[in-house]
Length: 242
Length: 242
DNA sequence: GTTACTTATCGTCATATTGACAATAAATAA
DNA sequence: TTATTTATTGTCAATATGACGATAAGTAAC
Image (cartoon, rainbow over all chains, first blue to last red; front, side, top):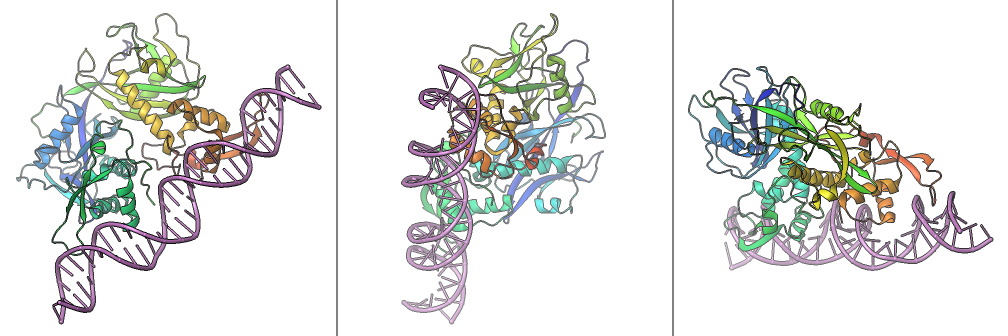
């Protein structure tokens, strides 16, 4: 690619992770409290520098692991987009590749005193302006939210917020939290169970809860293989926001 | 974001552009013939190094201009995604931020002998294996194609392939070329003209062509403002692939 | 045990959208 | 004037959606 004349500038490259989950029927995002120089004490997305020879997705997973203590990537991780370099880090031109993690509510390591403390925060607090984020992380979060919302429309990725098995109501709660709307339980049930290649009935049901036991479903195999960036829609027709 | 221990590696960063257009009812991609070291003589996506202090989108537009001679960005440019660093460039770890351009059929500069020669190539030739691309550019192209296909479903971006004014048939030809399918002209007409905030009738028509003159439309103002990455769907309900 | 309550699931119906295809409109070509 | 071509308007059945009634199957209260 180089012509020859422009000096191939080199940039520090970081990966950031917008980790989303649903806790208490509300969408939450994982944030760390910065302990060092720029924006010290402020909240920020977890992330860090990409190491030489390291894959972007790997780096994102590693940073997530370092700052939360999770062993395996606990949900669906995908690339969101790249930001910068200019004007986003007071230390200079830093390019960041943001990632999106959709995961079940996993516990974050209660870090020791000198590690950056990670915790879940309701997204609504950021939207309301109650929480300020460092760098351009608020913008990245906004892009992540829009991505997550639209992903739920055309892909089976809502299930990434649930465990391996889940009820239709739990799946609906995910849609309601991410979209910040209420959905009719009966119509949602019809749509979710009626969409081909989406859910399979495990035959088992919940027990002990109040109300009628709910059937437990899992993602269909066809929906599980939605790996790379360029996976074809599975939800057809899509499940659109009201 | 840095802990302190891992040395913040710096990477050369390039931008690549997957420029797509419709020529003779077929989807084409802009490729350059490499004149230098790695993959010399092979076809590749236009692109080049990001300069210090330069914005990614700006860099993509600049590289496109340098290699085709276009003055202004001739269509819709958006970020596609980032690739690498490891294992994609024999010269070392290079991170590339791929971009997607959807544009009308614009003429490329017939470059002099020592400049990299850019030209349109039917995408089908790449898909058929008749053309081999340098680096991981084939994979990037595949991702771009899937992105373009899905963009046409829920955004008004098909119009980016047309000029300022266009007929319904021209718009349909875009969908047919990108999706590689045939669409019923009558149903398409109904859908395109019936979708709110999509098209506005200019009142004028084509002249001189064979057959009945067609009404000329332009993009509605609401659809024009679909700028950033996170623009909300305009086509609602979407126009899905068959 | 019954009865009340709660959540899950099935059913109904009007409306909107889609796909298939007939018919008409308005130009050019013969 | 007639044939040909492309554009545009309709029709109709099948499908999907939104609103909401009714039933099922548990737990909680008495």
